[in-house]
Image 1 (cartoon, rainbow, N blue to C red):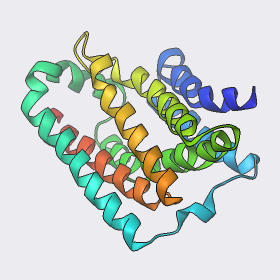
Image 2: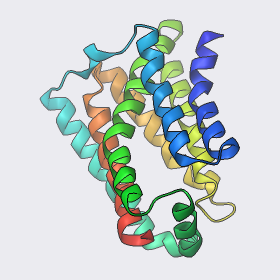
Image 3: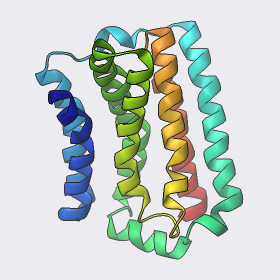
Length: 210
């Protein structure tokens, strides 16, 4: 029961912030507070798995570059079919992404988001799930619930019908990061890879949407 709450909690925070409160700042506050404070309160913050080694750096950079090319290269080519740019610009303005909000968006996506998400999903939750079951169970469950709340933020962005397709790469990335977390025992590769993936999203915003 406790694990179920920990798994669904981030999605509930996103839902409350975006759908109920309709405020991105509150969404960020609720979501990242959950990711940070739940492991701290549980006294299970996975600091020991943050060790940096050469293998992790190479794997993280290599996979991250591939994810970056897929995200930025793919949307550079397909955005005319997948995105309504004018609507998206209006939506982001309504969400507060203008002026200082742009800088906040970039900082959140490149610094807070990949670190806290990896610490929570491939660190804290992965450890708890691994104690209850197999590696496949931990990888699949962490990737599935990691993907779930992304759907809430992706639905307003992509053209009708493409949202569920657009969330598939998120699930695949979650599976991949869970797999290398299991094999390496460290989150250094997953964090680096996640940072570069989010950098692809920032570039899509900066060079295509903005």
